[in-house]
Image 1: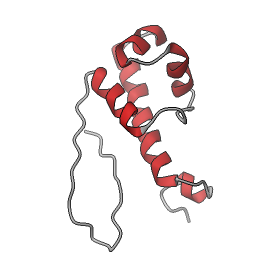
Image 2 (image 1 turned 90 degrees about the vertical axis):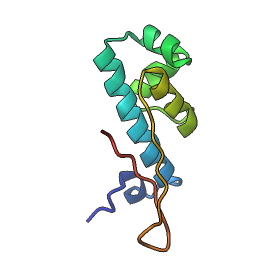
Image 3 (image 1 turned 30 degrees about the vertical axis):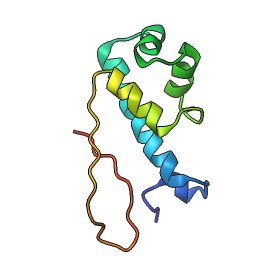
Length: 99
C-alpha cells in the first residue's frame, strides 16, 4: 500500500517538497487553462520565461522554488493561505488544500 506520496513511494529525496510543488503546479496548470492563456501570456503574467512555463506544464518544475510557484499563482489571480496549527503527531507535515 502506498504512503499517499508517490515521490516518497519512489524513494526520491525531498519527497515532501516534490509533493507540495507538484500540487502547486497542478493548480497553476488549471488556472492557465481556465484563464485561456497562451504560454507566452502565462509567462508574462507569472513573471517567468515561456520555456519555464512550457516545462512546468509538462511536469518539469525542478528549476522553480515553492515560493516562486506560489508567486505564479498569486499573479494568476489566486490567493494562497498558509495555516499553522499543532500537529496530531510528533512530526508535522505540509498539506495543500484547494478550495
